[in-house]
Image (cartoon, rainbow, N blue to C red; front, side, top):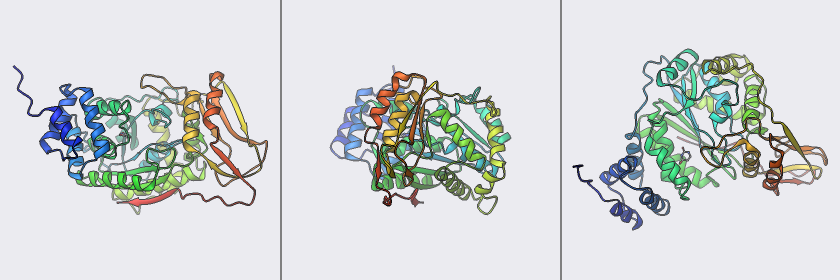
Length: 432
Ligand code: URA
């Protein structure tokens, strides 16, 4: 006969419902028992909602994170002869930064073992972007990951099923129960995976604004400081930057479109904001790994060394870095309705438009179109002329244009010439 369970799920739910603190024993048990299927989805949904409404103390968040890590395995990079450092973004529109960043940091002497995800909803996923490169493979065994990391200095691939399996199950449940936004659950979800990934240093890019989970600076700061404390407590040297996500990053949102822009950055060009964020995050990653004072990331982008790592990294995962990228079959151009200064271009609305054009998925099992997305011809602060292109929409299925255009309705504003829109800085704050 199976041993009796030491706790009762309903008691655990009642404790949090009544604003109590969960004991270490309750947390260890409920996370493990949910992963084993002993605690039912409806019970975990109720508990997640109680956590969203009533919060958790730092001690509870630490214990919850640790319990999630213990449901799977921890990766070990001690066979790599360079310090390991990684970056995690909480997700935004046009956020292709991992693509130029990982090879840049590797070109400056660190090793970057990055386990990434796919996009869901209006934010894109790094793996979806890289999969638009012909032949590139996201799934690697642990020994293949180690080989790519040792031979190129960077590996970006899918997390295996044994990395914090509790989080996989819980994240899918939160997604359909309106409980994604709970700060203790976001912090423990992200940090359980990053700590289990085994990186020695970590830089968190916590996005703030319409296109991000965190819509205001104070909640972003709370999330960032919770994650920094979780990382530091687990022996991972962790810092966080709060960065602007009111408008998309760069000039593209969509898989192959973003790869093309990332290659421009690796080639020493590309949009200013993508270059600035890549260089800023790279410097932070190197400093967190104890490697400041060596080669500067801005130089690695200019002298071709970051591009060299990129080409080797893509080829090591079966991709052809010289192959032409997929292009959508149809385009539709949105013209500027007036002349003046582009004062606002909303990240969330561009993200939804890209998603509706086929760049993202609504359900986990859907596929994405490699060529779909939105191309921007101007960023907030730029002068635009009536009748000139403002945005180009790309898709393989023209029937998608109407819904994408609906998503963009009211998403941009052109102020009279001579106005000076109040634009937020790209990097808002640093915590750590
Ligand atoms: N990303 C994650 O990995 N987990 C969350 O809970 C939210 C964003």
